[in-house]
Image (cartoon, rainbow over all chains, first blue to last red; front, top):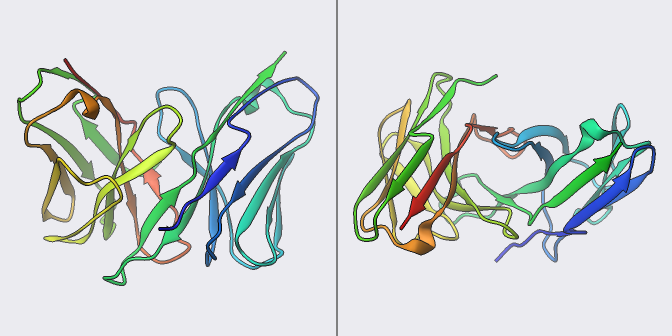
Length: 114
Length: 113
């Protein structure tokens, strides 16, 4: 069974601080996605990383895919209250039917205090 | 935003009663998914569909059934609701493919008393 574990589970920081969120698995994934979810809404895609060792930047957010494609990290520089939310990683799971099902991590709940 | 509508948005029901949640899309995407979200568990896949009348199980499918009779609609049915099925249910759609993003609805909050 493919699992994605995220750490930390909760994170509360002051505005302006930096932070890193981790997504780890014992399985190899062909790609990993990161989503952010705000209260009362569904998750929204932030980025997809595809190549081992790949680094993608989205303004103050930096995403990295591990060389072995078993892990990923999200680094936020100078966090702002607007970054508050639940961050989820997700990857395509193996199905016997050859179809695409997406497995999600356990999530990291971030709160940035002004 | 992708055109996904979940109904109802909120539902309270009693243990043992049947419940059906509906997901409707206007994007003509091939894949549709049902997830449940509970504290500490992230999103867990219940069932998904890869075409009309083509469905497969996810990791927490026991007690749930699904149907997809047309591209735009994906129904999730709890045949006999239990308190353990109290949760927030999300529908998602995707074109399919390893890197294709999922687009989510705004969820249905179900409470089973």
